[in-house]
Structures are given as C-alpha cells and as structure tokens.
Length: 341
Ligand code: NAD
Ligand code: DAU
Image 1: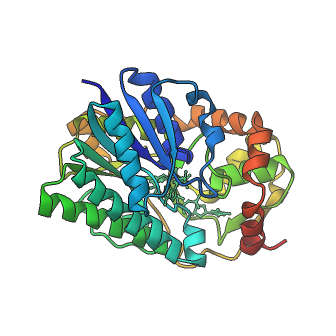
Image 2: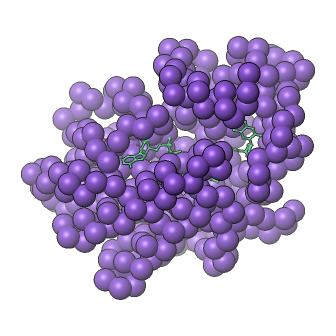
Image 3: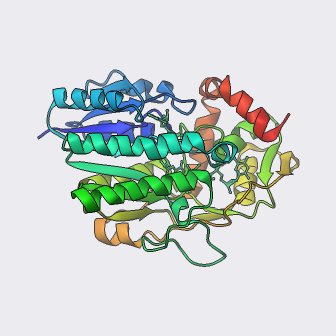
C-alpha cells in the first residue's frame, strides 16, 4: 500500500533534507509538506522536489486547526496509510531568550493541534522530532540516555519538552501511535545562518567578525543532517509505539574548535574571532548515548565529520545567492539586535 507522509516544517533545514531523502529513497511514497514559511522556512530548499509528482506543498500553520485539517484532507485524497513526521517548530535558542511566546505558540500549541487532528484522522504513525536539549546540560563527563530526567534550561528547550510531554500523554491516554526522537546538533546544507556553523562560514567568507559566546568552551555533539534524516526514517518504519530514541554521532567539539576548523578550511585568519557576551543560561555540554537506536533499530551514522564538514563548507560557498536571499529582511534586523553593529 502507498504510504502518504504529512511532513510539517518541511521547508526548514532538517525538514527539507528529510523530504529530499524520502523522495529519493521511497519512490512509492507521497509527501505532503505543511509549512507556515516563517523566516526559517524557505521554498528554495525544495526547488528540486517541486517537479516530483510524489510531492505537494501546502502553505499553512500547525497552530490553525483548519490548516491542519486541510492537510489531512489532501492526504486522504491521495490515499494509503497516512503518517506524520513533525519538524515544524521555532528552533533557535537565542530567539527564545529574546521572547518565549512564539515558542509556546508554535512548539506547544502547534503540537497539540497536530496531535488532535492526527487522532481524529487516524494516522498510522506519528514521529515527533525533538531534541537533546530537553535533558538540560552535562558536566565534563556522562551522556544523555533516554532515561535521563528532563531538565530544559532555555525557553526553546522548555517548549520542546512540553511538546514531548503532550505526545507522551497522547500515547498513554489514547494509545496514540507516536514515537519521539531526540537528536543532537545538526549541520549540513540548508541550515539557516543564525546557527553556529553556517553563521561562522558566512561571516568568515565575508571577512566579518566571528562572534563566539563566552570562552568558546561549550561542547556540542555534531551530527550530519543526512544521518539524522536516515535515523528518523528508520524510527518511522521500525520504531516501537510510545518509545523515545536518542540520535547522535558521538562527535563532540568545543565551539572554539569548530570555529577554528572553519577558518582553517576557508584559509582565513584567527584574528576574525571575537569573544562576545555569553548566552544567558548557556548549556555547557551536550552528548548523546545512541546505544538504543543502534541496538534496537540498527541505525548508525554514516558520515564522518572529517568528510561532511568540508563538504558543508563547500556547499555554502557554492550558494552565494541562497545565502544572500535567506539573510535579507527580517534576519538582518535580528542580527543587529543580537550582535549590534
Ligand atoms: P528550522 O527553524 O530550520 O525550520 C523550522 C520549519 O518549521 C520552518 O520551515 C518553518 O517555516 C516551519 N514552521 C515554524 N512554525 C510553524 C508553524 N506554526 N506551522 C507550520 N510550519 C512552521 O528548524 P530545524 O533546525 O530544521 O529543526 C526542525 C526540527 O528539528 C525542530 O522541531 C527542532 O526542534 C528539531 N531539532 C533540530 C536540531 C538542529 O540541530 N537544528 C537538532 C535536534 C532537533
Ligand atoms: O542540540 C540540538 C539543538 O541544537 C537543536 O534542538 C536546536 O534547534 C539547534 O538550534 C541547536 O541548538 P544550539 O543552541 O546548540 O545551536 P546554536 O547553533 O545556536 O549554537 C551552538 C553553540 O554555539 C552553542 O554553544 C552557542 C554557540 N554560539 C552560537 C551562535 C549562534 C556562539 O558561540 N556564537 C553564535 O553566534
């Protein structure tokens, strides 16, 4: 039977990479992409998908029940089992520190609207794409497992945690067929250049200062976006209802090392590094224990940092127009507020 996927937030960074993966790897599936096209949603990420008869884009907001119902009506008209892969969210920690309300709106309210509609329309499976930030921060040692207590520190992380708990409640109360994934930091093509890696590539390419928060010793566990998308596909197809799966690459770096690697690849001087005021409540370290998804579902990352980081840098360098267009308008105003002139 044909499987129809309702993807939310498919015009964003990870969502668009996931849409490309599914269209390439599952040629008998149909993909309906529901996206509100916020500042982070960009249809240019999906230019190649537009001519694919298995792909449909719907402009709509997950917080608006009628938009979500319209997306399910589209799925029903296509036929087959309908499953949901839920990416849509406000995703940037610094923006959530500026203002938490849009995060409650999109991430908490939006998820509940989507859950209600998904139950009403009887989905086969609901994959909720969450984050390791729900576990809070680690010291120098240890890893996040699926049993690590939830302890979100930023408004973004709190909103994602709340959304996870609403998914959990739907499973417990209604026997809803949901799975939750919690991944570490992604990098790769189509990432909005407000996040560390594309921001540093963009600034270094233009010989602008590279703003490093605090002492640059905060650690993140980096995973190539295609590995994340492959893991989500694996969980969607083989995960067990009600389970949480951590996803990570066992690839920890302090931020300053990432920034130096980018400068080295671009042949730019370290004098571009500028240490700036720290992020309030800045989580010190994230590190994922991905043993469960490896042992139970057989997923492991395929891309090494040594190969995928240079490829990512090359991708951004080859896309000056994409970079120019995503950084126009609203993003420039945000950049001024965050970093000053
Ligand atoms: P992104 O900000 O690049 O994209 C978010 C997408 O959601 C955009 O296309 C936007 O237009 C859309 N969207 C936002 N609000 C919406 C709404 N109300 N209705 C419909 N669409 C809406 O985000 P991303 O980095 O691709 O992250 C995708 C998901 O993965 C998020 O849920 C995030 O929490 C999670 N995640 C991200 C990372 C990471 O490193 N980027 C890691 C782990 C988990
Ligand atoms: O861990 C998964 C999470 O990773 C996702 O859930 C989030 O959606 C995603 O944005 C990301 O959150 P981070 O806050 O870790 O990512 P960001 O790229 O914003 O920052 C990475 C690190 O780099 C962090 O320690 C802060 C630092 N940083 C970031 C920026 C934007 C700087 O030093 N300077 C900067 O200008």
